[in-house]
Image (cartoon, rainbow, N blue to C red):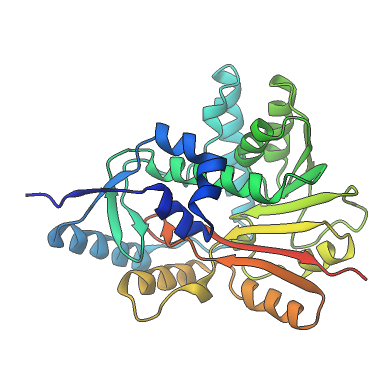
Length: 314
């Protein structure tokens, strides 16, 4: 007999985001009601198989984050999304990044669970973005996503704030071409430009009353985020939001967390972003408004920890 089916409720989302039920209900309660957030715990043999598969992946994986050859991987990946977008007649569903995989076990509360809905992770991200964007970005005129990829997040943002000026920045031209094509074909207030977060363009400037966010972009810098943060402090935006894996938030004594740590380290994803920001706060250069581990992620790691901060101006 399979284990009983559970379901994420408003209270669960509120706890995971570090907010109240009323806040979740007001901002994205209707979305939650319309989507299936049921899941079941794994039977012991199912869990053992997933753990074994994850261990094998860690052992055999050869991807090296930040390696020079990754440029071509990203260029070709976003180029494939651009091709799909054009051939589909500008279907926005073609923008979903390939790393969000349907029909797969996910991480929830430091364990693996099996969603009933094949798009559970995508729908969870949608709830998180609706809440996050409404919570923190309402008062800004211009919003910049650095490492924007397919424009997936900017499209979601444009549906909430159609009148705001949105900008997508990425270091490969295929992403820039795709995001500009989205703005053109769907008549969005959206533009895209080349920007290398490792070596920021000293000429590029942010608009007044702007906000900045990253979503799984700093993770790809292999720890080389110092120049980007200095760029942000020089501008500066009114608020900065990072949705990134934070290896420092895992529990070394939990098996599922420990596997995520090993996967994170094996690939060379960015570490020390949170301690770096905490040090800046100690220097009174920034104020950290929120740090929250969501206790949710994909099969190999949690990529959705939240850090919100703003520069201190005198």
